[in-house]
Image (cartoon, rainbow over the protein chains, first blue to last red):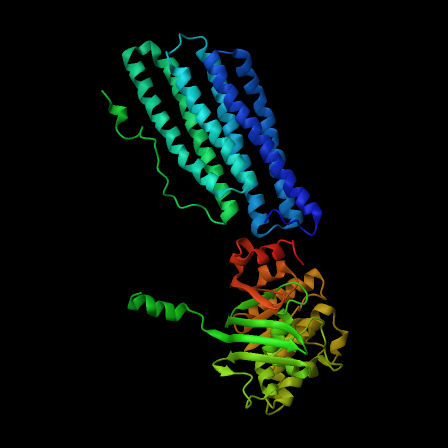
Length: 238
Length: 265
């Protein structure tokens, strides 16, 4: 529908403005994920600090977007596709804001981890997992702006890989901790980082589902494969 | 479907009050309405929306044969009310209009008293045997039109002296005084202020428990507020007919979406 303009052009400008801000917010979150993972891998305290500081801008955008979307609801009374566009802004900004918080939390834990002996190979796996989520977010935002439900469905299907990576890391950290209790503190932090990235994947999935709703007017059926197996007996391993 | 579901379906299913099949209307050479099929349920509000000249008012006027009064108008197809073809030769249009009442865009009370405005229809159709019976009909109609409290002390005053919103409710009282089963409303609030509009909408909601209400409106917001079913007309075609909440959240036809979101006029 979006190729056809409203008779009242100001309405189009309002809708374009909130969507542009969503893309801007998405760009900041993508960067925050990438930088948080890089800071962890390269032990870069300055970069970690800049991720922590950068979360303020993401929070401010969320607030601005919610105010703008509320204003459009009140003044333009959007319906049908326009209504879904505005409702989607609320959901997307909420998910992006949470993802920003997770990136900030990773940066915070990076500072703590730098004071400890490193756990071998851990940063690389987390970097890979973060990269996966970052790419999913990029595609989800592309699907959003291009109204591409197929791409959104593809993003949604890819979350299973993030879950599998998380399950593998969970087992790995458990092993490290059992091998040497001196690893426990670092592994606990690493585990929270992995969990943060796994949660980010869930938020990207929410964004993808919201894009499907935006395009098709209905949410997808909940038949998605889940890859998180950490609750299925691994806790008793060994 | 098992027997139980069939029974439940029969109980909950709203049998159509009005059923139109292949209705075409011509004004001279102009093809104003093209092959309209629709089933209008009883005891709910059906809204007709669409841009000016789309045929929605033309179709509304077919439902009580108001188009008969226009010489150049020609109606073909079948419109059935309670199983009876309303265009059958033996149907008297005047009797039909007592059963299918109409309220117009501009309040048009007769230049008579409030009482006589409401009593007019029952008198010409001989619905009351004596004065007390007529009084009862007038009171009941004014009560149903949510006007009784405001006019009970001045029934002899001219109807034209009321406010716009009161006049429109007077016209609704007049329309329901003949005991109709269907109420047609052609943009009944377009000449009213927001408060009077809200009162008429509240009234429409109350009336829908008793009547089959069909409303033509230019206000999409009004259609979404008062109706349970919405029909979208465009260029003489019935483009889409569905539950109102579906039409306004996720319409099936891109023309409907374009119209309701303000992209085509």
